[in-house]
Image (tube, rainbow, N blue to C red):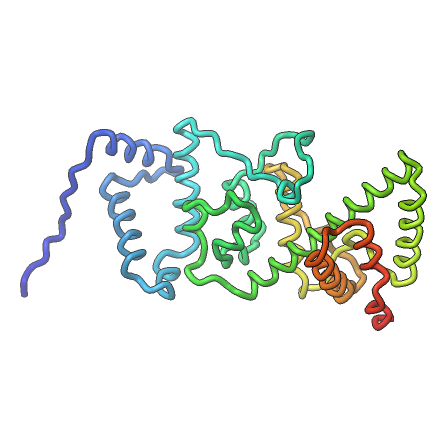
Length: 291
């Protein structure tokens, strides 16, 4: 049997050798791998990506190993004086003014660290499209490399619903705020009358104008975590943990939320969502069926 050569000789420019040494020096822990160790690891990852089926790749290169490499690369970036950019707040996507808010300290590294520490493991089952729906700056290669080779469509669908519902309540709050300011500052009788009607329908149909939370049961754990992650990005405090406490309560409102969202999306498909649309939403006869 022919003997296979166990060695691979590589000739690297001096600049690349210096970058390699810099990478090794920034690795935490007593054990510092050799240049050969690191190169073998990088070569192995490249070979896996080219020849290994997705179903086997996660087992060969588990999440723990991917996270370890991710944080090492983040350390290397920081050591090269490249300041990580904060993630844009999600409310930026809705066109609201955020210039008066303090500068955010939420970065991709801080988010991944909190996701792992809080055991929001569904995050690693998302695809690129849904990472971008959380934040447009989560689609870099360093974050994408953390994702499971095969995404979980059920998790992605749940995130779609959470984001849509969160946007709906944000829009409702904005419409109410603008109407109340207009009624007060300009003494607009038509707006004041519309607000009176809206509050009447809200009371009659028991429709929440703000998000009251998910039922405090295991069935809604994932939805609460997703909403908490989005709130955390908007808070802009990367040092804080995710919190779901304000998102859990004893009332069972998801069925009503679902009807509200369906009506809201139908309205938005035909016209901008303004005070007239909000009145149309809260007076819907579909709420009669839930009494």
